[in-house]
Image 1 (tube, rainbow, N blue to C red):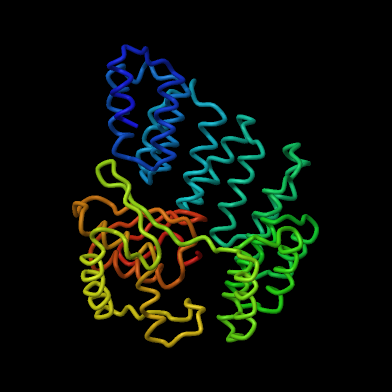
Image 2: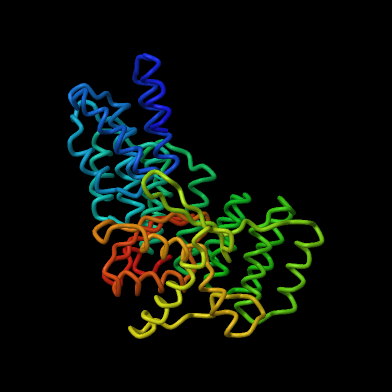
Length: 388
């Protein structure tokens, strides 16, 4: 990205707002903080007083995508009030929501109401915020008031967030009720995830049948259903589920984690074997596990839903993609920098617990963005309060 920027400069191309905006967005979408900071530095040569709303907003959201939420918040505070628009407010609301700053999110939402900035995106973000701090009543109240108070009709996204809010809190009957009222692949899949969380195998079978009727090749439905069967000890039904996947040539999405160091993205798959430094990573990983165990960490093999021995389950946990990324970050980043890791799937409960201990024992702040939200680990705790 920055090399492209340098190339364009040598060709005497005038950098207008669309080009700057595109370059910043590319950095954000690729979670590349290194090049984002370089571009920001170039922009500062023009003076912040010359920034447009588009430049301010793209900077704010790009730093957020890269995991540097404090930079986003500071930029928003410096942004002139007359340039702040609905997008600016929604972006800050998203940051507060995904980083579990619920009180700030509520205050900002009220301010947005006075400015008449609330739209369908604002409501979805706020419902999501309530869901992830286990406040389904508030999420439901906002959902119910959408049309009367804001003149906004709920969309599939709002229906799905409501299913998630009920499901996370264990209100599976309510969650299923709304999945039935507003059926979609995403809403049923969200409910199936809740069935896994609460080990509800009978409901999971029912929900999976709805998903398969919509898309019989949707791999996550088979994986989640198989995991529920494994967690509840129904090994025969798990085998049948995974045999169906093989028969229909349905492949699961492999777990993948990545981090950016000096502008270079380093990727790790679950059960990684191809990375050039995997041998070093594995050696250090074993030492780290032993060290964390001395401080109370105990591998939770219930998160491995495979019908294998306990020793192999422990080995399986150590080979999750975020473990490799975390160890590699420790090997290569300065002590005072947060370890920022991205993952394409949800983090499992054991890796979540492992990372809490890791943050305490090695005195590191770890920011992990999984498929759902950001997790901020400090001093042995996570900002999500274990509501993952």
